[in-house]
Image (tube, rainbow, N blue to C red; front, side, top):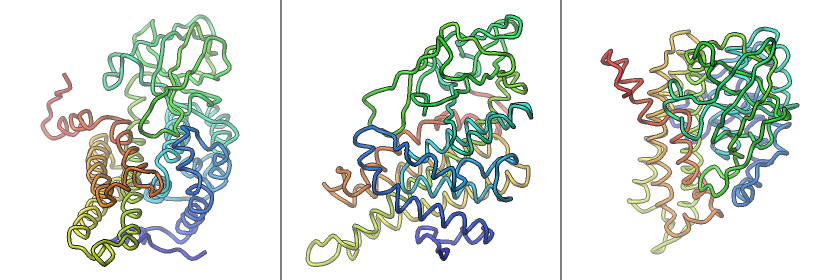
Length: 392
């Protein structure tokens, strides 16, 4: 297959990729278009996750590119960003699954696990043999997780006893392992644990009634005297600062997904503008419709430039928390504008799934909120600008 630039990549950022990266991206794009796009509206409407995509995405490297133990070839953070973008432009729910499996599950073990833990778990997650989840958010603790975490971990000999609750945990209704963050009752520090989900006392219940990312299986988790062996404690996760290392990486990935979600809505709008006829001609020939499309493309192009640069900074070793935070808050805000403009272009047809744009419009609300709200990311950047923390 021949590599082709996305028309929505107006300045050709994909040309920064190597030939091997372009080939891998082309193969991923082909699978998403042929096997994923045809089923996602039905899955979204039924609030079901298409489990049949897990292994094929693994075979294409979706969960393995980042990690030395599993990556099929050397690749850049920009390429890995385009993987997130490519997935989100087809379906934000599938992109969220990949983000949890790759960025949060694999990412946590890679960033805070011992080499033995990396060797044990990363290949199994990367191959799709097992599914991972990430349990940080709680019913009463979200943005204040650094200080307000209520789930506890108490050590007794070579085991830990976990008690508490988690909420909004993606993949958790069918995950094989869940990373649980808990406060050590001995020293008050946040620590991470690899919890196998068949452990007695661990229960996960699906959250119903969502209007966004309906295919994502978010769960409420309850932990009642869950026993975890010391070997499953993440050996290099000793404070919330270690948790933040993971979140910095995944915030940048969410920024890429936000651009992909914008592109998905934009591509649907461009196609519709070329086929819908009003007042005797295609609506793409009307000035106000072109205005909506151009504003959308401007948002996409500006956001794409930002995420490309923040990923380059990761490769250079210069990316800091505030860089990822600015990318996440900016791109998700622009995404919110873009999907609204694209939905507007459809008129009444924009509120049904048939034309895809309604799904992107609804899913953007969740992408806007998770992995750090706009407000929290604003305060991270604000602290960098002024030297003053203003979180409370």
